[in-house]
Amino acid sequence: MSPVFVAGTGRSGTSRLADIIGEHPRIHRIPMETRFIVDPGGLRDLAEALTTRFDPIVGEDALRRLTDFLTVRVPGRRDDRGKTVPELVGEPRYGETVGRLWPQLIACTYDERVIPRYFRDRGELLAILRGTVDALFGGAAADAGKPIWCEKTPFNLLCMDFLWELFPEATIVHIKRHPVAVVASHVEQPWAPPTVEGALAWVRPVYERWLAWKATADLTGRRYVEVRAEDLAADWPGQRRALFGRLGVDDFATASTFQAHKLQKRVDRATRELVERELGDIIPAMGYRRG
Figure 1 (cartoon, rainbow, N blue to C red):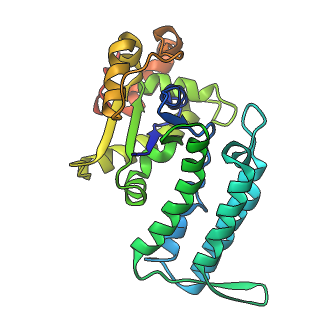
Figure 2 (cartoon, rainbow, N blue to C red; figure 1 turned 180 degrees about the vertical axis):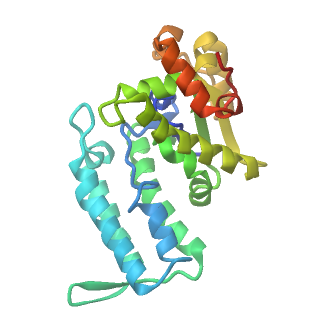
């Protein structure tokens, strides 16, 4: 069955959408952002370092960063319930899967250093990485009695080529929200810039990169779904039915929904005018009106 990746700019409804998808009886949501696929030091960087960017130093550095990611950062980060990724996918499974990965990536070791493998056939490396991800996420889904898994990381938005390279059959769901509301919501987050100007500096390049990629991307034959949070709230049953249909599963009345009042942000006139001026043509390019 096709895995599902949820993507967005951040503060666009990715968490809510992933929760809803995970409430379907056939789809298991990995309950937190695992991040090791697309974040710096993760699998995407490793794929480049052991193929097109390979030299022994670049490869060794990528392996060390991935080691730190999978053995220190991932086990050390907890979700709102105090759970770690190894706990959520099964600690024995996590340890065994990560342990099996290293010998497949290393040519040999000496002293305390490693010589990474060079993969002339990128497909061979991708098969190894695909097997690692599916062992973790597919295993967790199987434990939950579900055949499909769903992973949410907002910046999957900017890594779709790699995600489809890793899982050609995957469905990527991109959820959009009005950019003014996205900027206003960023300002309220402890991890984001606290000013409108700072939030604009954060999100504008994300929009620009996404729109530039989409303008040249060939989505023919790709399992790509694009939804607007506002549309989901305006007609939840109909939009939910359409969403699950695009994911290849029957409709299901989930406990969670999208609600219009939770998407609305009180934005003063000056802030709205600043965001609309700074984002220029980005707002209509994302399918929204200014004003």
